Length: 272
Image (cartoon, rainbow, N blue to C red; front, side, top):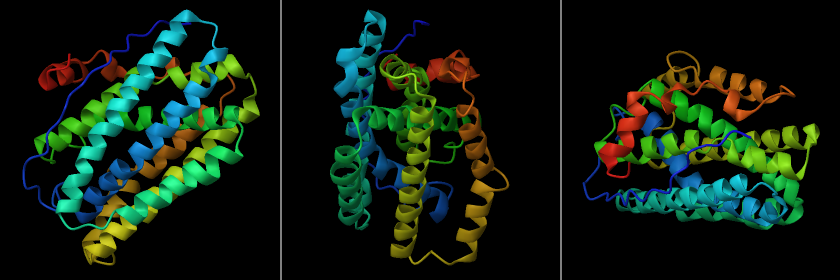
């Protein structure tokens, strides 16, 4: 197993500015798509932590044990920092509690209790693959460049660490089951959950802004998913790569791991 460098960092971000409601390039759609992710992450990352903790006793490799514990520490910092950003959105007047409560209910009361521990872990491994590859796309394409600096720091730091620990959940899953069907089941369920809830949350936030059916919203959605960023096409490719029976996250070309942008990011945040 390849040894990876995973570091527990504590950026302790402070969101003290009066951020505009549409903080990403004055685009309601792009802003609320990212806001939807910040609302999903805390529930998702707490679920990831529980799914790995549940099966960590079955991991024989001491190296992987240590990496899994560092994975848990990194994910704990992620949900803490994104929960801080909730306050920004609430201050802007958005009603969030019903959305967060719904996701908590789906994950904590429906998904997790009714699926076995290996399936829950396979969902975590699948979603970690998705987030690592989307993180690379975001960093490579400088997707956050038009956002306020502190918000850039939040998403870019999170993205960089997703790349850093991208293989941990996958390797823990391999230690507890070699079932290909279990692995694929996990990413399918993961895709359904994250895409459905992101769509629901983005739609609800746009509705609160009365921006849902405006031409700019439709145009920005089309650019993000089908033309300029082509995120929909890239997401399909990410999914298809995972279907390869010989797939492993460490074989993905994530060049930002050694690029200046990746290395300087932590230094700028004071957590290198």
